[in-house]
Length: 272
Image (cartoon, rainbow, N blue to C red; front, side, top):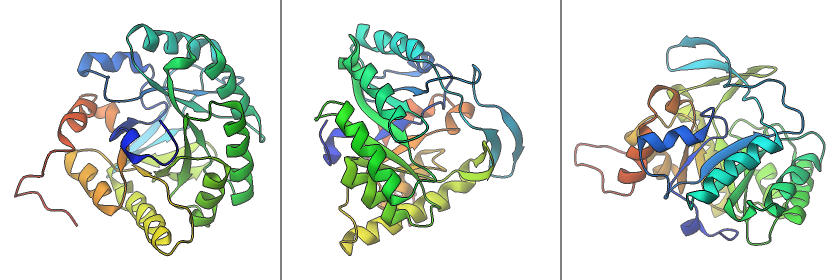
């Protein structure tokens, strides 16, 4: 998958850490048309298991940051992908400029590296220069034809500038995340964040038309909880959607969207 090729990006992705172990998704449908999520991979995991849920409310839930996994765990999951002919998107997370790139490079150079179909790095909270440096290091450590995704927040003050920096560093797609930060390591996610995500997608789409950044495919990651909300995200300008906490309530949604998202909507369905 090469930089900027929308056709090479699956229509439906799974957010890193949305499921504790993505191997369990195979029970709900085939995974050949998606990238199996692996990660986020970190140098020193704090604890095992899924993200902690702190509370529920109208339109979503409050949860902790997704805990990372070790390189050894990531290798084991990539090996599982390799034995089944599946491709993975590896999420990496690190401090400083080079830690995430070093983790991705070690996985791509390993025996299971051929199973890595894309690498995603979390740049929420980064400025344009930090995004540029992180993506450039990641580009140096990974194969030239590997798709790199930059995960940005729809609420970042200079969303267009950070996206511009990420693409200049080597990002081939931008994931627009609608999750709302509630404090250190605490997030609000759910259907109510769909409008936030779509606003970010529209802002980047408009900026691309004004040639304020070198546009790459956009992935909507926020508030996608059913077929209708996925189609609304595509209508806003995204080329793909990413499922997160929606899978906690309905793991079969991945198979549903993979099969039906490209089909024409029913006449009763309305898009903005």
